[in-house]
Image 1 (cartoon, rainbow, N blue to C red):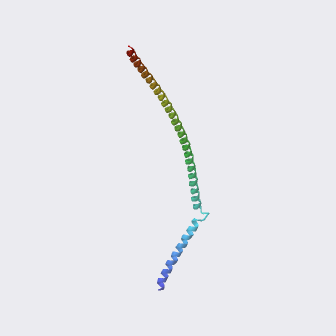
Image 2 (image 1 turned 135 degrees about the horizontal axis):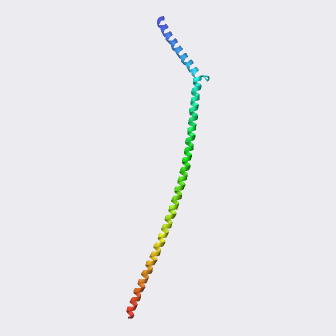
Image 3 (image 1 turned 120 degrees about the vertical axis):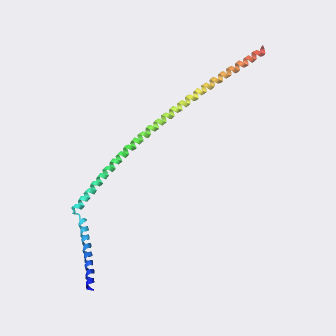
Length: 126
């Protein structure tokens, strides 16, 4: 039985040594004075700085586009206002011309009516 126990003890000891080795490796990799860790930290900081620069650039572009959109909207509103004023003027002009035409037609109608009346009166006197 001791033979079996010694194999078990050997395996348990080997497993414990492996755990210790992993723990030591982990502790070493997270040590603040580890050059690889410092290099990785610098790379991450550089990436974060680049990301911040790109975000700032995107924000500047977004603000510029927003300003341009506001200018375009103002120009479109001004154009629409001018078009509405022009349309109102044209409609007023058209209504004025129509009223003048109707007045002219009424005057012509009244003149013909008066001429008929006068002719009828002339025939009766006649």
